[in-house]
Amino acid sequence: MTIRHFLREDDLTATEFRRILARASELKLARQRGEQITPLANKTLAMIFEKSSTRTRVSFEAGMTQLGGHAIYLSSDNSQLGRGEPMEDTAKVLSEMVDAVMIRTYSHAGLERFAAASSIPVINGLTDYLHPCQMLADMQTWFDQRGDIQGKTVCWVGDGNNMCNSYINLAMLLDFELRVACPAGYEPDETLLKAAGSRVTVLQDIHDACRDADLIVTDVWASMGMEEEKKKRENDFSGYCVDDSVMAVAHSDAMFMHCLPAHRGEEVSASVIDGPQSVVWEEAGNRLHAQKALVEFLLTS
Image (cartoon, rainbow, N blue to C red; front, side, top):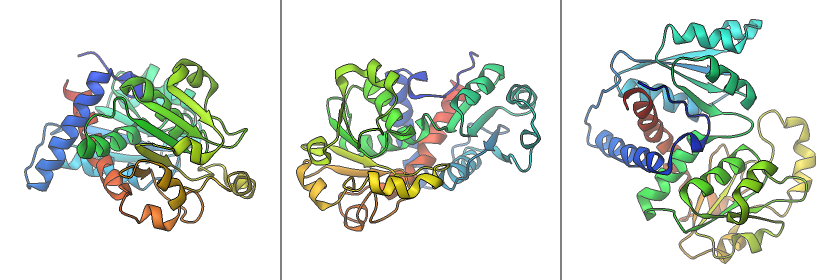
């Protein structure tokens, strides 16, 4: 079997991405009916965390259990990575012992080095550059409620961070228009923007960017590792809160998404995230089902 990694959204074809979303919805319904589906019996996923996590750890660990497999938690504190073992050496060792590895780390280049040395599938659980597993959950949420996103308009509000970069990849893969609302100096990755061409537009006015949007997405202004920038970012991003006035210029049935955790009163108002257009709790829950479908795809296709 050919080894497949999921380090970025376009490691899958558009057809494969949609296939995984459809399977995620099947697995979700099966769980709601109380059915047990265990294609990963005797399979083990190693989970390496260099960044803290709630949703990523719980969803992967619970998902492996539900599919009949097992997950092992590793961090810099409880593994040789914390004592300076090279990524490549860890990858080779784990390839002899487990069936797949999920890594949540800072450096995307480090993740790529790990995958290059691995003879088993490697999954990007988040890097400073991309967050592809969140894209699976976001799109499962959209597809379940609205159908295909092809041709729709999505607005990203806030920092041009890993989530924003992933939405750029996704716009190219699934064929939708993306508008990015961010202050000057916080634009997303220039190489990705160039590759996306006219499919992605960067604007500084939040209301112009969100006008007639079908989906509005945001994230915290200061991601993990940027705590020292928090005060500066609060000033720079003032005016970039997704509030009722922003939702009012989007389509009347526009959805609101946030990968969580959220800071109410900063990047989103309480009235929006807790309001009727918000799907953040379903979105968070779909991390479980989307990642189950992903791991099954990587280990059984």
